[in-house]
Image (cartoon, rainbow, N blue to C red):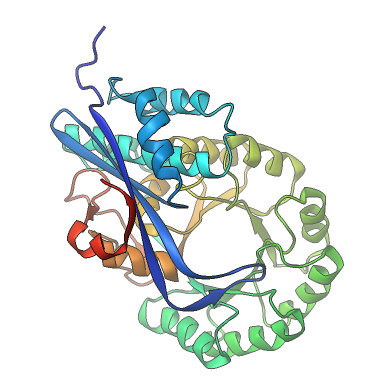
Length: 369
């Protein structure tokens, strides 16, 4: 039976945006961020999705994934998601393929909502109408003053009561950097630290004790998220009141299930631009509900705001410096914080984001969306 509204075309384009300053975390450094935009058309409407990945996935999106879903029912993004998962079986579902599927999946939900002329939140259903955010950046390349200015600004200007900094590049300096950050945000705001897997287990435990002196409330990836026994060891012995978080590199629901079954985290992270899009994110949310573990949305806050409202145990969203800057530059409708929260714009169909092609043109590196 021919679908009432079919997927007519799938297009993609990559844009490489320089950072405003050199950036690094505990394991890598970078000076640009690549956004891959996907546009899916059907029923005279256009749906938009994106991921932060590599330009190489444009060919995968416009080739194998487009051939897999073009002509199928635009009202059934879950069926398209399953077809794409099967299509990349022999390529490997993790990594680049997962980010490509994530961008297409998000565009499909946006398309369906545009055809129906309703906000995405109304399509997904909602447990809440606003979401707490935590300011995130504090890169290890920053001077102490730059660190303090950024974190203090989130507290003073955005109303954030939670802020996160990077650690791990120079472990011997981390306690003093954490102390400087805490001085900048004051006693009422909570400081998070993110090592991006830079430490060894014993090293992480020793630093956790030092960080606890500054009331650090969240230790993200103290060791590699691939080392589930290591995460469990840190979680078991971490100071009281310090939560262990990980999950940003979970590309499939199976990754999250393994992490939750291992008891590796106090808070599970997931990223809609990596974990299979909205379909994958909602599946992960259901797992978190079953394990009684809160979920935190990783990065890309403009894209998370609608699906995060549809998750029962959503803790907060990451207000990540790079992505906030890019989403403000390149999308009309990006959320604006109010007293440390953001909320979906229910006056616009879909996720409410319109890509500014003219503004983005100078950053284009491949494809033609």
